[in-house]
Image 1: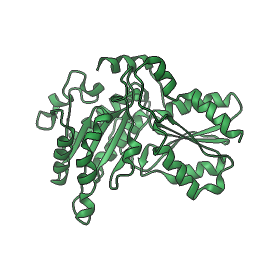
Image 2: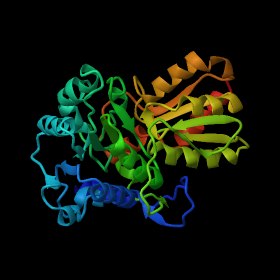
Image 3: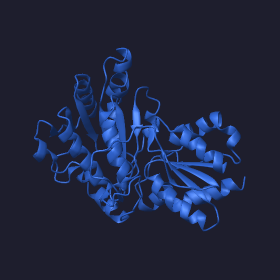
Image 4: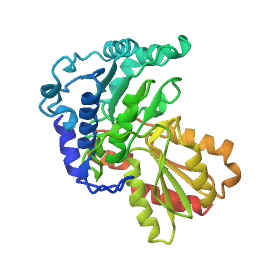
Amino acid sequence: MPWTTVQVEKLGEFFIRGNSDSGRILSYKDALHEATDQALARDPRVFLLGEGIDDPAGVFGTTKGLQEKYGKDRVFDTPICENSLTGFAAGAAMAGLRPILIHSRMDFLILSLDQLANHACKWNYMFAGKVPIPLVIRTVSARGWGSGAQHSQCVQGMLMSVPGLKIAAPATPYDAKGLLIGSIMDDNPVLFVEHRWLYKTTGDVPEPLYSIPLGKGAIRRPGTDLTIVAVSYMVVEAMKAAEKLAAQNISAEVVDLRSIKPIDEAIILGSLAKTGALLVTDTGNITGGVASEVAAMVSEKGFSLLKHPIARVCCPDCPTPASDILEKAYYPDSDTICARALEMLKQ
């Protein structure tokens, strides 16, 4: 959509060092494209469906040219009918295929909750583990410029409470490729969350096929005074915040969760054992979200490690404004993280 294109272009590029030093640099969107291309080539059971995937833009470039390469039987556009599409994809997974369904806006993923939460995520359990559901749902979350309350949401926190659903939220191009391959290989429904502001970020991505298992976080920057646990695009803001805090002699360790269900509890508690201070930042709203779950886990399993109260930096509990001025006030950034960290460390 035009306003999204404008906003993505305004961001410019941000390089994130991943877990590889192959010297091959790709953008986030190109890493997703390569992962999908390699998955389609590797396994004839994999197919791709969704709204607008054969449009000239190809879902921000992530599906461009794939229909021409693999044919309309394996890569095809669909009607605007989210619940039915999710049911169709879940049934195909139940029958032994490995569908990748794209919801180009996370807001409308809510329309498919019946098929996702009531059916796809429960069948394997209901059939005593004998019916795997290898379904991947790619969904594009968060803001474009002026997209407003119904086109800017990050509802991954809401979906964490669905039993049987795994949730990936890669922040780097390396992880975008590896986690998408890992999600396609997984025998459970996986929600694959892509923040639209990450598409132009760049990083090191090896060409050979590789996978990353869900539930393993990564240390993006080591530190000793403060642990910043970040999700999705907020990893970018957390890295910028760590630089600003370093200028004030505060050493912040940045933990990228990479997937939020399951959560890598060990990497969080291990970092907290060094720093004694925890700030959690997520792209969703503050109440009942990923940050709340991480804070609850640390309160239960790492309370003795805390030297300061836990802090959260998330979006406020109100619908997203469309005004450019109000958007700037609504969305947290590196300055928000810095201010909250300094406040927390004084307590």
